[in-house]
Amino acid sequence: MPPFIAEYWTKISGFWSDRTMSQRVLIAGLAVSVIIAFGMMIFWMNKPDYKVLMTNLYPEDASRVVGMLQAAKEDYVLDDNGKTILVPADRVYELRLQVAGEGNLHGQGIGFEIFDEVQIGQTDFVQHINYQRALQGELARTITEFPQVVKTRVHLVLPQKSLFIEDQMPPSASIILQLKNDGKLAANEVQGIVNLVSMAVEGLEPKHITVTDMKGRPLYTPEDDTAGLALSNTQLEYKAGIESKTQRRIMELLGPVVGPEKVIARVNADLDFSQKTIRKESFDPDGSVVRSETRSEETTAGAANLAGGEPDANFRGDGFTGTRTTQDSTRESRTTNFEINKQEENIIAPVGELQRLTVAVIVDGTWQADKETGEMVYIPRSDEEIERIKTLIASAVGFDSVRGDTIEVSNISFGEPAHYDSDSLMRTMLEYAQRLGKPFLNGLLIFLFLILVVRPVVMALIRPRVAEQEIEEMAGLPGAERLALEEDEVDEEAMDMSRRIENAKNHAVQLSDENIDQAVHLLKTWLTQEEGA
Image 1 (cartoon, rainbow, N blue to C red):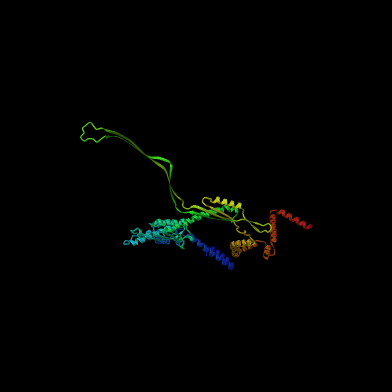
Image 2: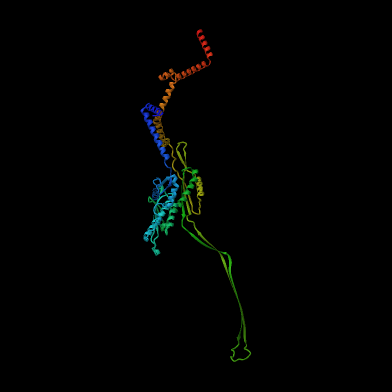
């Protein structure tokens, strides 16, 4: 064995033999812990760095990706219950392109990829069923992309087309949703799902669609033919929204005036949801314009002879004698067509128009302490205050007397205000103690662990070194001081005085060595003084 190895081995053996059993166990445990930590650090440093290849995968897609990685003999790690696949960082982009190039990620269920492999000999019935399955799967995949939706099931009923219209049955759909954290979809989101399905299926109308969650709660119910006789959910929500906004406006207005929790307001709004179309035609008789004019004139002129007797048929004379008459006539006609001003109006009345608003408000009075008895006495509000409050409410809600709006303000006592007794302080202290008790106990346990466990271990490691240093310091002291320290017969002040004397002695010796003549003269002077004394 080489000398330096033997020397180190001797030191280690001596150090080990001088330790107690508890110290040996502690040192051995620390050594094993250091070795394990070093090994884990080496393992962690040599471990490959994994990055996410794909995340939020469905079980079907995760199975396809894992099969491809196994076939290519690539390292991978599954995380998040198999929804996330991690691969080495230097291979993540290349493998991601390979997975995308394969085109095998289709999502949950079966979609139109069922028609990628054409099988010869399939009947029309099988083709129809496959089309229905593919359409259901594609709709389910699309709906699952909504942020609040975890899983979707879509069931379609697609009747066979008939040659007769009266025998044709309409298609229908049922949708079942699994929401995140048992949440709830907003009305517009549910309506969006209904519109998506109705536009994706030929001939499907929203009234033939139902939407339900996994707990059987209906999220969308189709309206029947009698829906016009009652208010729909949307109309009820609109009515409740107007009433709540008006109530909140009254509370915010009167709260600072009468005090917090001293006013109650309720509003009822009568809305007209009927759909009206008004057509009007009005004529202005005072305003007229000539549209067309027709004018015709007729003149007639003629003469006639009236015989005095009956003429002879064989008469060959110059003529017959009689009376001659002349007739002249003139006729004129004129037709004028006037265009009268006409105004046509096509008015579509708004749906949900406010017809009447009724407001009921209850206001609390004031409480004052009686000077003689000290009891709280209720003081109602004056008529002037009630009238002023009613005026404020009318201005805030848009009061219209022509519309038939009514406002009622009443002053009613809400009860004597609660008095906080002496137990409230104790109750508050107990609540704070319950809130802060657990963190305080955790801190106390940590403190006790440090004092009772960690401190003894640290002191056991430090004590041998401190003892060796004390032994070395005592070995360098003079004999008398060393004996005194060993016997514990002097205190710190004596030790300090002895050290000062020793320092002065050493300084005197040094000065005598440097100035021997002066030292001899000083000694002779001291001896002379002693002889004279």
